[in-house]
Image (cartoon, rainbow, N blue to C red; front, side, top):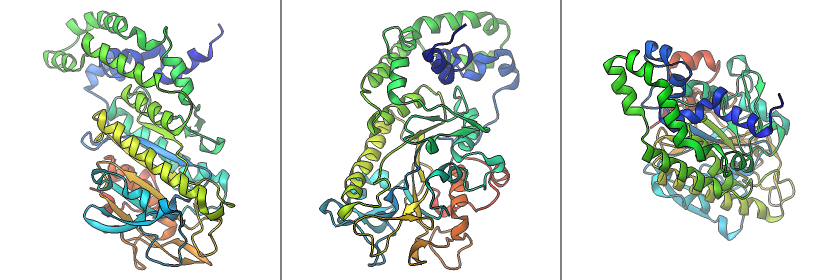
Length: 437
């Protein structure tokens, strides 16, 4: 029997028997629908700390964007080059009560967002574009060569009740930005493909109400005869009403109808939709921040994309707040490398294996700057970090070489992963407690 592209995509998104759609239609966890008797007997799957678990939207780039060139922490040394475009003028901003200087676009984020925004100055130790998958694997620091987004997803899925543990990529621009889970390459699902699959007149979202009623009818015998009073009360608290299903369906259809292309705006809509449908704990997108700008006269492209990139982040944060998800979703960035910073970089920047900046925004993070930069090998590189304060320190217990793995451990700790799992999953690095709220 020939499987259509749409059917294949539906299976990827919603699992065998489209259990994810039934979970969306009923409100019952996918794990329960897959095996109700076992789920009732087990009393729920093991998960990370439920009070800390977060969905994650990860922006990643194999181009090595110069996001590292204009963030807080790069304005202390006057020899570091910044764009002279008026939109990029250095501007004061406050992160959790501390004053910093950054390019103006960063100061336009709402203060409530800035107080949850943490800038990590890191070293990826590669100047090579195709090494993006290795950077996502924290350059070999993750056990069995898992990728950070996959490790996050694997730990978070049981607690968030998602259809699948595998992350989903909606914005990869090059093959190197594709994700891997348990050694298997994952498909890339652009926003337009998501819209065409879900939002057509005969698409699955139009059938949520009958699917709800059908699924609940199938579970009726087990519900009446196989569940204790306390278990029935728990299931009752989860079941979505027909009125709620209508609202969910219309909200998702309206959002998907707004997707006209595969732009960053559409990627954000796609990511929000996948999270609201509880398809996956982690969605990867691509937000340009200057790209591979070897030849960028006056750093004009860098300036334009820094403005648009921060605006995209602001739009994401606004969308999360409007959906009531601002405390349930964290945003992270991780790129293959950063860009050179010295005085010679007025008309473009070169690859910098010694400095990359990752941004983390969310409830688990304390606004601030982790680490910093100093002159290194004719340019600038990340320096050692004090894990307790997060400050740059020559005597810090986290070396620049271990800063990438430490970022990974900190991200996992932020969403509630326990110390034992951290130490066995990521073999180097230290949790930077100074970055955590």
